[in-house]
Amino acid sequence: MRMWQPERAARGPLPATEKDIAGLNRLFADAFTDRYRRDGLVGVRVPFLNGAIWRYAIADAGEGAMLWRDESDKVVAFNIAHKSGTEGWMGPLAVRPDRQLAGLGKEIVIAAADWLKAQGVTTLGLETMPRTVDNIGFYSRLGFVPGFLTLTMTREVMRAQENAPAYELLGALEAKERTARLQEIGRFVSALAPGFDFSREVELTLDFALGNVVSVSNGGRLSGFALCHSAPLAESGTRDELRVLKIAASSAETLCTVLEAVSNWAASQNIRRVAVRCQTAYQGAYRALIECGFRVRWSDLRMTMTGFDEPRLREGILWSNWEI
Image 1 (cartoon, rainbow, N blue to C red):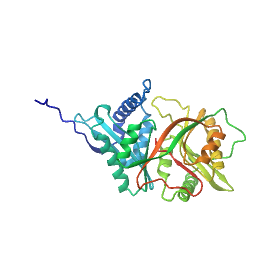
Image 2 (spheres, rainbow, N blue to C red):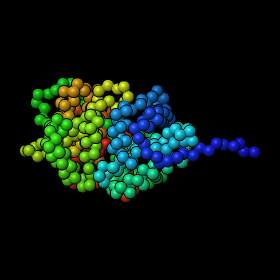
Image 3 (cartoon, rainbow, N blue to C red):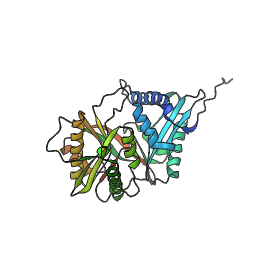
Image 4 (cartoon, rainbow, N blue to C red):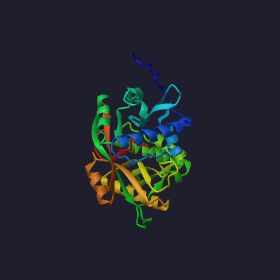
């Protein structure tokens, strides 16, 4: 005789809003702590994310911010899908540990992928830990293929350098100048990767006071920029690391110039470390970062859905972080 089992259906996708941040944070911390434990990192406890970072992610995703609820109306899964013009990516996403291996993970990935496709994206991707082979297999069965590594690289900032390259902060400009610079950044990105558009992330970063955009010019023309977040990533964290979320440059040499400018701005804000997410498809840029003193701290595997690959740039460098 079979024992009666309660119904364990999940309702969704439902819109994720700011009022859901507490539930999202709890699930995020529990799910990723469990993931690290199963990968052998027993002593790791993932902290809650800064509430301001969640608000930014939800606002950036818009209708792509999705969650699922259990029979008790608690958050049981979520997927935050982002669209930057024709670039689409998802993350963070998680299923509560007690509801994994029951098909809900597949449901939340397909829901986000379908939404992104309906938005007309031509690139659709995500990132996962390369050591987590079951995650790689799971995403592969849903149509994703592994690409290059994304390496988190950091460099300590000692103090502001007098001979650092001149730079401009978008947030320090008057409204008219800011609009003109933002349009110039849009044209610069579009010239490197037609269809990509980071204006929403830039505007939300300034609106939520999370950071700024550092830009450098050559001969009066924009030659590179970096969208940076200086707000702590973890709840109750300190401002000890500046994170580069988007960076574009006309060359590997200019990339280092942009990062020198970023480091100088970080020093002026009493931030002691700069972190950039290096995409290893750009081998020359990776070597340039090593020569500039950056060191590898973490690795993620970049995966894209079949038929929705990242564009291969003919020239220049464009790195778009698929994390918040």
